[in-house]
Image (cartoon, rainbow, N blue to C red; front, side, top):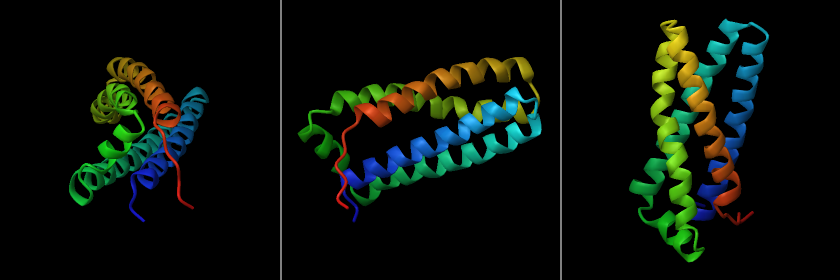
Length: 137
């Protein structure tokens, strides 16, 4: 059933899952397995893009206003705005970081990677712990 609670729970699961993938990517990098790091990052990018597009279609096309109504009733709109303050910039940095990695612009890629990790940490914390949900199982 397409409810705000289920959409938020699904997003939390998606964020947690791709974060595990990101940790695997960082492990591959630490082990000097740069090709594996790049392949994992490509999968990470695709999954984040699919989740983002799915969320946007749900929030603005299928059920416009559903999430805002739910979060407003939960007094959590401020939490959403804080979350968006991390997630939107991370979504903008991600394709540039992917491009610089594929083109082997190492210094810029590493700088963007550090910025992305900070932004993703904020996305993870605010998405998992700040946004309310109550799944209907």
